[in-house]
Length: 72
Image 1: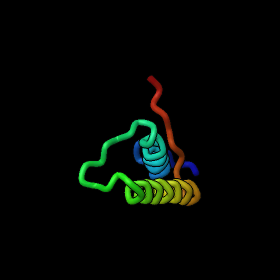
Image 2: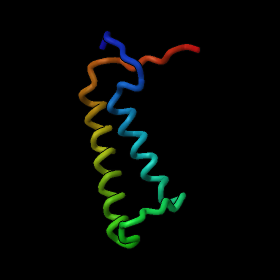
Image 3: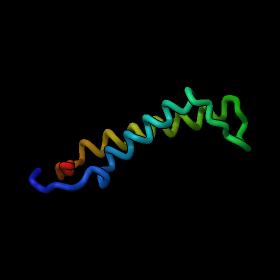
């Protein structure tokens, strides 16, 4: 891996951010208007969280470039 790219172009970073936000959504009690507040919304949140975790895993495994950080 000798090619570099900015962090915001990384699929792994974005999938990890989505996973973290979805995991924390239950703490905030984000209202989902129009969706049954019961089991359906829990199932959807858990599915999307698992899916974004899988994307993060495969993003890291298939990575061919380094992530760089711009010094301030």
